[in-house]
Image (cartoon, rainbow, N blue to C red; front, side, top):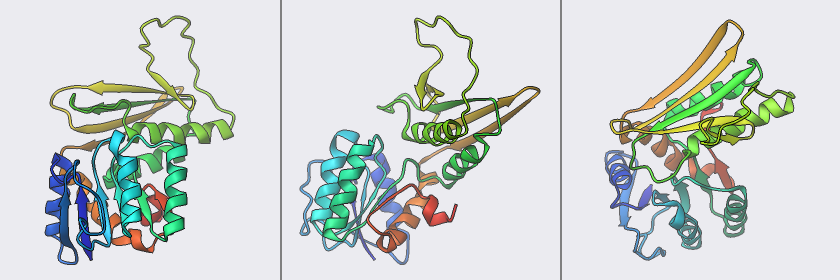
Length: 244
């Protein structure tokens, strides 16, 4: 399978290129940087294009990849429902597929799935995401997706976390996503981590996921590259590929 990478000059893009070159069933045919034009010619006949850039550029990149006649595997986060809907419509119209995931680490995918399962079994829940201080967005896409999945399950069950806080002028209780408080930590020495805390009287469940480097995302990215062609239109998250 012929594969191209958009954002190949970035740290993540370089790691993706190395992973593709190390896979016997994949061939890296093009490396594009952020300022390079995306077209059928510049993609070198790629069947699948991996896109890891920045939120301000990813929409245009994905639509250009689809227009160039290739499937897209997208690791850039920050997507909204409206933007996803436009990608889905475009993908169906041109007969190509797009897979967008908030996190390609298999441990993170499992953590989100486990958290959704536990969402209605506990009175309280909070999400803490911890990253290096060079990360440009907060909260992380993974934490946002985790909170949304937990919050939707709890809302359907009519649950909300107790909180007697009346004053918090500094916003120390964190941001609230779908009724779930989310806290973002930026600390030198960290890479990418998430804790989902559930509490009942007398018990606590902590689901913790840690990525210590970019290599943690490669198995998920390679899985997406191999499977995106068999998907229909837009797929969000790796869960459908893992049967969870």
